[in-house]
Length: 387
Image (cartoon, rainbow, N blue to C red; front, side, top):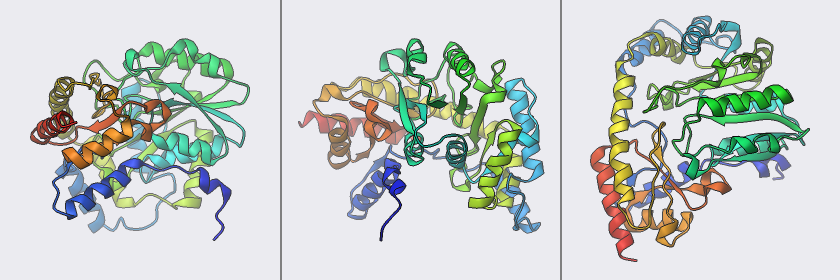
């Protein structure tokens, strides 16, 4: 079979490959502590589940508009308007099966072969994958450990060329847990305005933040006309398997993104969209409690890792990941990840799974119990002591 050449440029998410390896070891009787998968370990709040069940019984099992049911688009517009302090219309909203399609569709709609896209590195691997897939050039904005995993804003404009079409940003960040400051966002806005660039602002972890408040790029003056806000329900409401996300963008672009939905998925499942309405408009207690529990876990794993010789770990300000530097162990990131799995029974991801600038680091998700986190840290320390 001869595949299209573009398929050779398509990347993947290593987390699912590592999960498969971990499951294989578990099938052999090994105990593995899972710190590789980036999803909340909580159940979806019951009021959201009940709303979906009601929708199913009321017959919301048919096609709906490609951009989403009007009721959910209105709820998203209201929520975005309130949290960003701006006016957002339902016509600016496109609902998708998960948030990834917003990345996919935005790059397909706006970026051509030979164009350039600035993106965070280390960063969510699908950014670079999709840039490569369309034949564009990925230009990394390096997230630096000494800056709290923020890029150097003084170098931002140096990376812009006449071929630059888009800037991708993510805050709070996967995989580092870093958070961009208002000054960082304003620097991006200034460059985007000066060079007439679109900005894809990935804010799926906006509610999982521990110090201060989330600053949304969309809330900056003049940002609406050139911003695609990528958001979803997976992280905030523990709804990863529901596949429900959305984009907020200029209305003229929403028409085209909706057309890509028509050509690919037809629409997002109707009953899950009614669950989304309940998530936004119903009680938020479970979400707040989940974030507090993540903070408690963060405050266990960070000092635990820093107590291990050869490992240093910055304290993340958001999301539910730590990105420790493991160079002091004498191993590179991939050897460390393999050793952690085989010898410590702890599944983690090599930092280079998130780009070349993840060298020397591994990502650990603390979406696991405090008991398991303590055990994972102890196992890693014991395994390293045997070297």
